[in-house]
Length: 386
Image 1: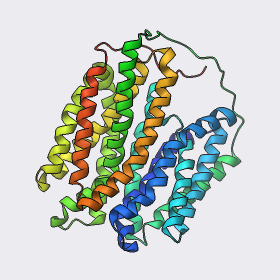
Image 2: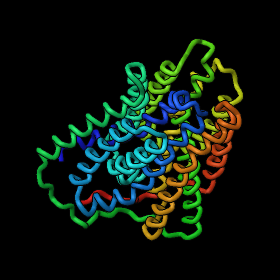
Image 3: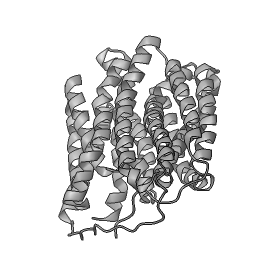
Image 4: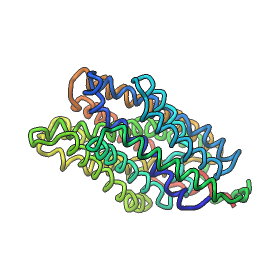
C-alpha cells in the first residue's frame, strides 16, 4: 500500500467528520429547527466513529492494512455521496452513521493509542489539518452551491483514490506476531489503580472537552463576533484556521511533554485550560479570538498527556484493562458531546453554559493529575511489529 495514501487517510477521516457539525448552523435554518436539534443529526457520526475502532482493529489484523485502506477509501467515499443525496434528516443521520463507521478504518488505534504505540510520524498533525480542512471545505461549498457539496467533493475524491489504489495494489508481507519489549513498568497494584483512575478521567472528560470545543467553535465565533458583521463564512474560516494552527503546534507540544512528564504537563495544561474556559464563558466578547487559540492548543496537549499515561505509567499486566477502559470511556464521551451541546444550546441559546461545564470538567482533570506518580515510568504500551 503506498505510504502516501496511508498518510492521507487521517486527513480525509477527520475532514469528513467535521463537515456536518460545521454545516449544522446552516442546516438548522434550512430545516427551520433549532441548532441543537440539527446538531443531534451528527450523533450517529461521532458515536460510530468511536465505536468502529474495535471492528477496524480486527479488520487490520485479519485482512491486512491494504484491505483496510480499501474499505476506508471506497466505504467512506460511498457514505459521503449517500449523505450528499439524503432527502430527510433521518436519511442523513443513517448516512452519517455509516460514514463514521467507515472513517474509523483509517485510524483503528485512535490518536491517543497511536502516540502510545510510537506510530506518530506526523499522522496526528495531518489529522488535525484534516479537521481544519473539513471546516474550510464546508464553508467553500456553502458559498458555491450548498454545504452538501462538501460531501460530494470529498466522496468523489475518495472514490477515485480508492479505485486507483485498488488498481495499483501490491501484495503486502504479513507482519510478524513477535514484538520487541523494553523496560517493564513495575506492577504495583495501588499505583496502577491510581493511574487507571487518571486514564479514565482523561478518556471521559478530556475527550468530551476536545469533541465539544471543536464542534462548537464556528457557532461560538458567530455569537461573539456578530456585532462586527461576522457571518457563518467568516466565523467558520476563523475556526478552521485556528484548528489548523493548533494541529501544527502539536509536534513541539509533544516534545515538551517528553521533557516534563505526564503529571507535570497535565497539571500545567489544566491549570491554564480551566481559567481560559471561564474567561471565555464570562469575559468580554472582544477577547474571544485571543482566548480560543491558546485554548485549542492546550486541549490538544491534554490528549498528548493521555497517550503518555498509557505509554509510561501502565504495567504490562494492566495494559489490556487500560486500553479497554480508555476505549469505552472515549466512546461514551463521543456519545455525550453532541447531546450535551444540543441540550445546553436549546436551554440557554448560547455557548456560555457549555463553556462553564467544560471548565468544570477541566478542573476535575487538574485534580486527577495528583493521582499520578511523580516519576515517569518507562516502557511503551504497544511496540511496532518486527
